[in-house]
Image (cartoon, rainbow, N blue to C red; front, side, top):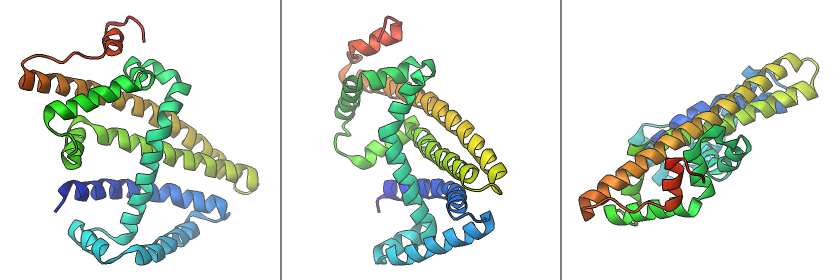
Length: 237
């Protein structure tokens, strides 16, 4: 049994549970409905798709993890938001100048050097192509915090868009729309800031693990990229 896979399902199912409310809000705005009616419609849609998607092997996984098909389906939605955030949030971070965070700026401006550090760590630690072990190590270093705030970023974006639709599309729902819009914008800013903060901590943890592992295996600390050393010493990017 691949326990890393089961843990991923549990993690993304948890995020899927969080995702349900913003999805209901989006349906309510698009369909010009109350939240109660939108909840029923959203749940019915998800249940119908969960039945179609649940093959024999998925049913076995659901049974082992103690999850429902709807929750796992929401987990796939959360996983999609995480993957989207992995690609886009470095750019949104640049838009806010990384809130002054030099470590995160280094990972983005010097992507090849950051990739090299990760590759060399996988080599020296013996992980190489072992995805299960790689996910385990990343989890220990705090990658799930980063994934959480990627997903929350897009959920708050969804709430903001829903609020904008309510504000523009219906006079009766304008008050609700304004509340959702500002709630979403505050959540967006907070999620971006927290993503930057957690990414910084992850990088610091990662480099420290890399150095300790290299010292243990090779008897000396690794030669870190010059761009990273300059950044740490505050001598530029």
